[in-house]
Amino acid sequence: MQQLTSSQQLSAFVRGGDVGLVPTMGALHAGHASLIKRAKQENECVIVSVFVNPLQFNKTADLRKYPQTLVADIALLEKLNVDAVYLPEYADIYPEGDEVQQLSAGSVGESFEGAARPGHFDGMLTVVHRLLQQVNPSHAYFGAKDAQQLCLARLMVDKLGMPVKVVGCDLIRDVDGLALSSRNVHLSNAARNDALRLYQALTRASEDFAAGERQAQNLLNTIHEVLNGGDIKIAYCAVVNDKTFAELNAEVDCGSRVIIAAEVGGVHLLDNMLLVS
Ligand code: PAF
Image (cartoon, protein in one colour):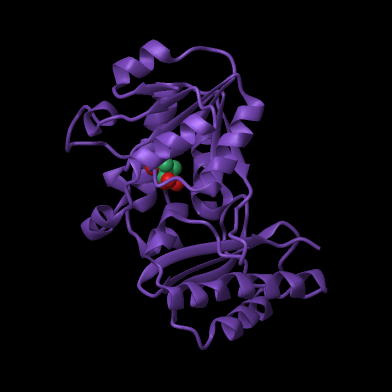
């Protein structure tokens, strides 16, 4: 595996053909591994970027706390037979320094996760756009755990007519059902137990949907019932159109997505589930 530590090294490496990019901020786990395995199946060459993008953190404390596990990340990438890991410095991505003209994620970027973390999605789209321009992949892989991010990446690529296919990959759960996230390492045992309620709540709502419930409010009531009692502060909980992220307040149809974000033991967690009958 090649380690590319500058944009110059990346340009010397990049090639045409089927190239899969898996953008990450490191702290890799089985969720990332599943994206990489899918990228390996669908491309001749797979590049994983590891860059903790300061522009998508609205709180400096969050940025400082973000887990950094580069040695383990590189070992995992070697094991997965990735062709190259791109490890840019800030200046490789943002040569203009502090004066970055950020892309706007528009109104979709201001709802849900964007309301809880103002500027997050502008920063995320800005870095994804630059990575896509630098790597020029045919495919870019994003996990469905960050469903709003995936939706926004798709909308950006469509709007700008970028020649890349955005591939959304299934959310990966631990054996107990907890959605895998780099932030899970910050959960105490008690908080982790409470966090399982997110999965349980989503499962109940999706079972109700499969049994014929179509009213968004009734599905959300079920979720609130399950979450009630744990040490969980709900940031938002909604049913959305998976393609536009517009909130659905009345009748819900197959392929809509239920999304939840909550503070559990001081850790901001996301989870979601697609409704299928
Ligand atoms: O999901 C992430 O880890 C980040 O938001 C991404 C897509 C790598 C952009 O920094």
